Image 1: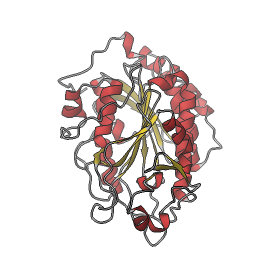
Image 2 (image 1 turned 60 degrees about the vertical axis):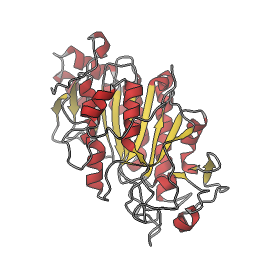
Image 3 (image 1 turned 30 degrees about the horizontal axis):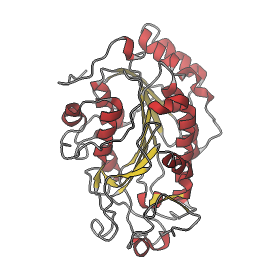
Image 4 (image 1 turned 90 degrees about the vertical axis):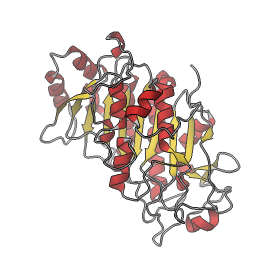
Length: 393
């Protein structure tokens, strides 16, 4: 275990069954990892792998340069393809469930946001997004694991891999079977027996509903499997002695061709994302008031469409924060407009994504500022935590 100069005080009683990492490695295009932590707050990080087009998700339809730049991907403010937020922005109609949460003040968006990365490699951008440093391969651990380490964790990993954002100094016992086509009852029973002698970890597995993992909808194929996986994440997070922090990722956002507007590849992905987020909220029940959902992606896409009806790798994009106590119904950060593009091709990165992440960890999980800057997001002093992200209880 790595020692940090400042950590959060934790009693055995408040430890909520120990820090238990649970990774379900499936044939679906995403991964789920869960951890218990000494808090009544819940946090789920959703990573959209492949780079989501933020301009197609939250549309600046009244920007003077929008229609000229977007060309065939432009959408009209009075179109059935959009749900107006205000006189400047609209949600894509596929995000209707998110729009409903926004209207209730339970969701906010940060547009024109990016990590410190300024090139266009998925691999490097995702590495930096997860390691929390200022360069790809800058750290071999993930910022969410370092957060958990500051909360004195020990863990368990089931499956061949866990995402980088959840790897690091927080101690993890791991077991990877040679073949893991699906999580069935026999598999989970064997996993439980491995920790018969560790009361904390054994109880963490049992009380998070891990033994019922095989109850997920096996008919959900491809991207749509994200929806029952989000429901399963809610089962883990909503229990009184279950997980408190999690990470889930879903691929398929690299819309180089046939991206579409109201219909098409992006709209399909946005609809699946929104249904998954809405299902998660419903499954969380009253614990939704203790929950924060962060939705992020490695970078944005070009402002102009390419010759195949898609967009290429870009920079500025959109991030979301949702939850029952989120101070929502608003745009976070600054809007740079589309009159000037980054390198004459991308939405300008006016907002540092680390500000949103740091604000969430500080205000929702109570992570001290000195820990955020010293070990969780090193070299981030200029990225001040986004203020007033949550309403008081």
